[in-house]
Length: 362
Image 1: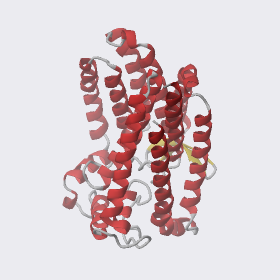
Image 2 (image 1 turned 30 degrees about the vertical axis):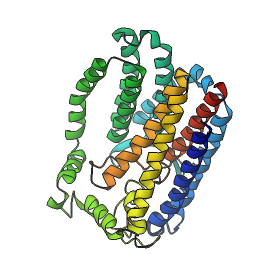
Image 3 (image 1 turned 30 degrees about the horizontal axis):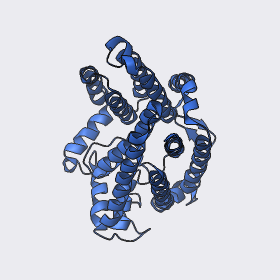
Image 4 (image 1 turned 180 degrees about the vertical axis):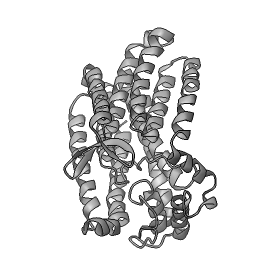
């Protein structure tokens, strides 16, 4: 367990350092063009990083088991924020996902994601004796998770809703809920997912761009093709740090959704492979912490944290390489993401707390 704690520290620190460097490299020109300050996005990224580190230190210093008592209030508060943003949130690009506080913003869905994991971990741990029961073991947590997913979908934020659904399914499966109930919930979600995708023109365009971006290279396929060009231009060793051409207003969202493409262009296949290997190592070490934890609440919560970060990494890298449709999720610790960075870093503090506490109990 001690080795896993040290390895998580090292892996996370390396990913954060890569993120700071690549956020500046990929955003400097855009920031100067928009705000006449090449460090605009870097400064904001570091601001959220510092808040995340402060939260991580707080969570590391507090016994994680105390969160069980606050699981319901935290979830209720996050639900209220999701409702409030639908009513009072500022609409940007047709979506209401952020609260604005001067120059900074806050995305409640990131807080709701962590709050839901804490609630589900507590609920599933308490209900182990009745976990196979449909009405007592499955329905209550499934309804709560469904309500959170619905509120996120209404923003609309399909990528986060899918991520929350996947994490919920993983926790249900590991907790021992009957597989038939999980499959039943997936079937029930299928019509909702279909409507969510095909009722929004921009989501239909993303599917078409994924299937054949070359059909409309100057329209729906433009972003994906520019991502391919960035990755292909990097070759094995890359063009050199700071020398990307696609970030010069060719590849939209190069510092957020498609930062892996800029890594590939500047640092080559070796750079992208290194990032992927770091996330694989993170998954491996995180799973070791979860499997070795004897406390069920800690086991489920650590599993949820590791699943969340690993799944979002897979989705982001998959979208950047054209393996899956674009989902709009940032690459954990690396992309410019504001609230997501803050809660990802805070979650690592919680994961290390679990590892430390479980080690002490053993």
